[in-house]
Amino acid sequence: MLAQSSPSSSSYLLFVLLTIGTWGLYGIFLHKGQVLIGPDDPNARYKAFLFVGIAYFLVAVLAPLVMLLISGSDWKMAGSGMSWSLIAGIVGAVGAFGVLLAFGSGGKPAVVMSLIFAGAPLVNAAVAITMAGQWAQIRPLFLVGIVLAAAGAYLIVTQKPKPVPHAKPEPAQQAPESPRES
Image (cartoon, rainbow, N blue to C red; front, side, top):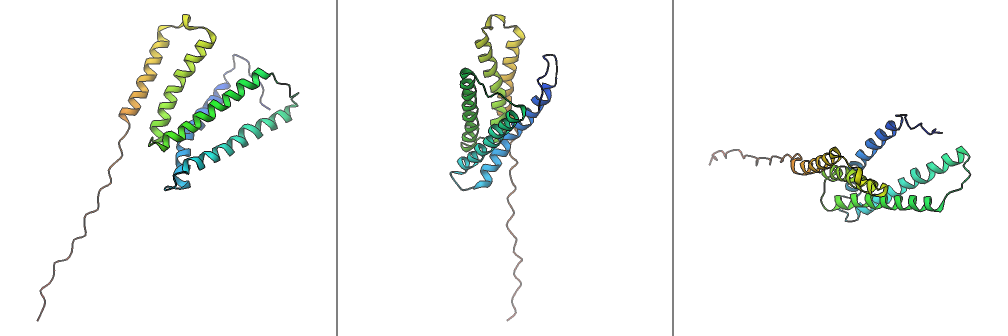
C-alpha cells in the first residue's frame, strides 16, 4: 500500500515523473494503434479509443478497487467528492477523445501532444487560481511563465522538423539496342 507522504516530502516527484513519461507516450502510442488497426479504416480512431476505454477500466476501476480492498476501506464517500471525481473522469476522457480526433483531422503526435502539454498547464493555472480566488496575488514572473509557455507552443508548431522528402527512384535505363544481323 502506498503511504501518504508528508507535505515536505518530495516523493511525489517520482509519481510526477511516472505521469510525464506515460502521458508523453500516450499520444504516440494511440496514433500508432489507430494507424495499425486499419490504415484504410475510417473508423480506426474509434476502434483505438475503444481499447483506451478498456485500459481505463483495467487501470482506473480494477486497480483502485484492489487497493481499497487491500487497505480495508470503509467505503464511505461524500457525494460532492464523488461528483467532482466523476466530472474529472469525464473531462479526462473527453480530452483523450479530443487527442484522437486531432489525429484523425491530420494532426501529428509531436505537434498535437506538444500543444496539449503547453496549453493544459495554462488552463490548469487559470482555473486553479480562479477557484482559490488568488488573482490578486499574481506576481510578474507568473505572467512571464504564461507568455513563455504560449511562445513555446507557437515555436513547436512553427519550427517542427519537416518530413524528409523521399527521393524518387530514377527510371531504369534500358541498354542500347545492338544492331541486328540480317
